[in-house]
Image (tube, rainbow, N blue to C red; front, side, top):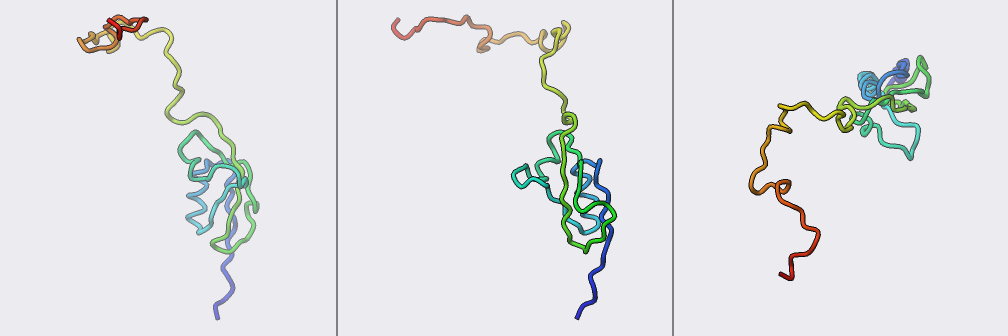
Length: 121
């Protein structure tokens, strides 16, 4: 017969990024899951943008057995590390790769565009 399960306090995950919250819980042999069953899985939230834990159940400090589940609520704060993909204004200065590259013979941009069909000629 085994003894009573070891109880450990639930860590405070609020304010951590989802990735960090998972790491903290994993170090204590606890599991983290999202509060919305229709929402994205937590694994998908570790790469796209900055997802931050905004709430948790049970609350921090509650004693639970190892391998218990912590349900977290989260929200996206800011963009990802790659930055925004918006066009540059103004255009890059002369001397950059964009202006140095000369068109080659097969370059589509160097050929005139026809608006009529050439099939019947």
